[in-house]
Image (cartoon, rainbow, N blue to C red; front, side):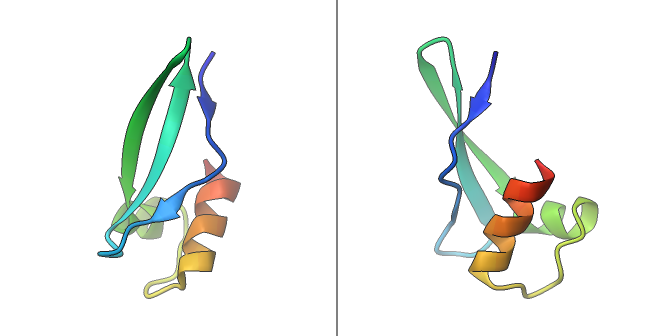
Length: 60
């Protein structure tokens, strides 16, 4: 079973949210674009970092 680490971060360039998937003792670093969150998860354009992380956590 895969789990998502609960520490997503908005990267400095504000184009991606970085997070980790942990599966069977290995970790995969992942990115999702903020534009994907805007298009598919109803994130408002130019949202704050806090709002971006909140949207990511609630809609994953």
